[in-house]
Length: 343
Image (cartoon, rainbow, N blue to C red):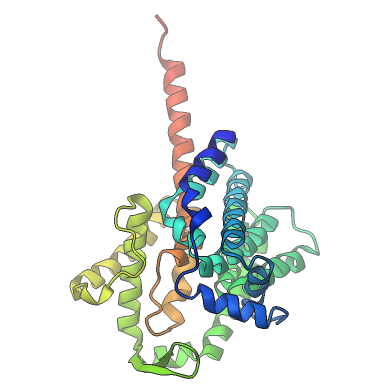
């Protein structure tokens, strides 16, 4: 554990001299002027800025939240049935994965860390034997997550998945119906259903709520294709993080590549389903990732294409799937060693 913390400290050593970038200054100014706005989405993020207004303190808070998220992932992996070693592997992999660096180093992305804490807290509660208070506690965790960022609402899809993984099928079915109803209501209220029905729409892209920069087409099918492309790119970066960038230019991606990306996501869903009996936790991890990015295909925002720091929660599923494969490989090696006669 000491070695892991030392490696993490070395990896994030540049944070001690890093400053504010992009939207960080706007968040800081808003938190200082209105630190007590509560409750509304991201109000918890505002409080976090108010508590740690200096650059160094703010980076330290983000790093502490990253450690908390990594620890919760390890506990969740263990509660789902992975060995203690695999749980440590999952926690360490998430803590040191290059794809998480933007969520930690970019202070405005702290909202993703807060959302992940809420989602993981709710999912951990779902691994405990069901009690009458369970749903209230789970809803409270998700509410706190949404106070960090609205993306924590994906927990309403992930909690039923956890119930399925732990064998509580009746509770899983009930929560699935509730989640489906909630998603349907959310899509209708957000106007997403009308966009899907019309196969098109438009939205205003503004930098400060008053200055209109552009009216941009956000028709549903092109939106689906570009988000699928972004998702497949980040899935590739999760396995081999070689071309991480702040703002990838998806406009230059050929149309056939976008269709191939969508087909790749469908194939990944098929792979997850095919492994449900032989490798249930691999299926769980892949399903977690796909469910976590699902709202990105429905909620349409101009130029709001899935990026590195927004991939934090989906990455958790891949980490758990990887830890499950690592656990399987380790068990295979141990069994092979026991069968090999000693000279």
